[in-house]
Image (cartoon, rainbow, N blue to C red; front, side, top):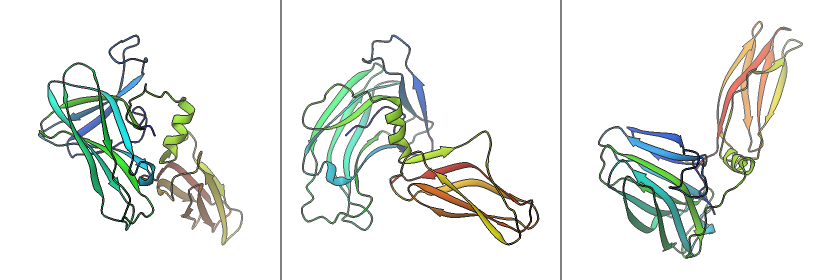
Length: 261
């Protein structure tokens, strides 16, 4: 189970919080393994942030010892909270906290590790969309800057070396949860006769975790044309047009598909 580097799925809560991907200086030795990127979290006011890293299926770690490790630094000395929580899915049992740790950050990169026992599933109702997650937060709610790198969650009581996965594998794992398609040229469907539907099936690069929530820019040209988003599936999306004129044209671009928790 790995919460990989900052190209991975993170969710940040906070009204005055900015997150950016920063680049390590080539050849730096503060964080080993020659990582390329790290995440920066900046609170622009006296604001608490909550940074979530979710791992699909609460069963994955239930009742087991797990170890969280990561590298972190801040603009100055500060506390960073970490809660390891369980969520039992839509309509499942109420979620709960398994263990908590407070880390003291400084202006220098440090490696932190914590080991704890995840809660049992005995007596719990587990439904679809269950997960467990590490939640980082700043308890002091000050204007702060926090840098995080090489976050990893493992079954067992030992923090091993950070797992470097290939870029292709990492991209595919991320696209299972979120995909954005912004081609230089939009997808088109031409109509050929009145009152006839023409459709296009847009296939995802990977099968998504669940049926995604979809956003897009879609227009229909021609006389009386009607563009319509029809269906979403984990594997594909379907768009169509009612071709009221021979020149009718369906244009679809800037598609986003979100299958996060």
